[in-house]
Image (tube, rainbow over all chains, first blue to last red; front, top):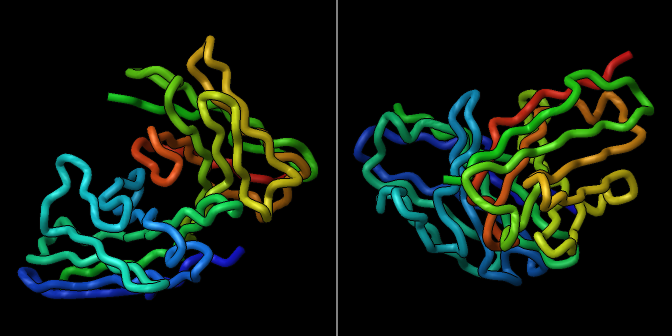
Amino acid sequence: QSALTQPPSASGSPGQSVTISCTGTSSDVGGYNYVSWYQQHPGKAPKLMIYEVIKRPSGVPDRFSGSKSANTASLTVSGLQAEDEADYYCSSYAGSNGVLFGGGTKLTVL
Amino acid sequence: QVRLQESGPGLVKPSETLSLTCTVSGGSISGHYWSWIRQPPGKGLEWIGFVSYSGSMSYNPSLKSRVTISVDTSKNQFSLKLSSVTAADTAVYSCAGSPNYNLIAYWGQGTLVTVSS
C-alpha cells in the first residue's frame, strides 16, 4: 500500500494561483470520486478543504478548488493569501485498502 | 460542534501495546465513522483505520495484524490498541471522525506517543 504522490513543495506570490497534484492509481484516485484535501498549519490539526474531488465544506473560501483527471487529483488555490501558507495533504478512498494519504506538500506564499 | 479529545500514555515500552481513547463531545457517536491517524515527527499522515458506529471496521493493511479499533457508544468514546510497538510507531496519534467513510470532517488535536525503554 503506497502513499499517494505529491510534490514536496509549491510556492506562489500573493494573488497568484498555485496547483498541487496528487497522483495515485486506478485502485484509489482513479477508481473513486473520493479524493479529499486537508490543510495543516504548524502544530495544528488538519482541516478539511475539499472532499469528493470538488466539494467545499461550509466556510472554506471558494479560492480553493479541486479537480481530477484519470489517476491524478489536483488542488488549486487562487488569489493566494499569506494565511494559505501551510502543509496540504490529499487522501483517497482505496477500497479494501481503506484510505491513503499523500506525502504532503508545503505551500509557501512568497 | 463535534469535538474530539485523545487520552492515554505518552510513553510506551517496545513490544508493549499502545492504548489510546478518544472522547467525543458535542455530538453522538452514532451515525459516524471514527478513525485513527498518525503522523511521525516531521513526516506525513498515515491512516491507521476506522470503525463505524455499527461496528464495521477497516484497517491499514500494513498495520492490520497489530491494530484493534473499537467503539463504546455508552461512553461516547472509541479506542485504539496497537500491539508489539517499536520505535517506528513513535508518532502524534490523532482521532478523527466523519459522517462518511471517505473523508475526515473532525480532528482531535493529537497526542504524541513515544516508544522507548
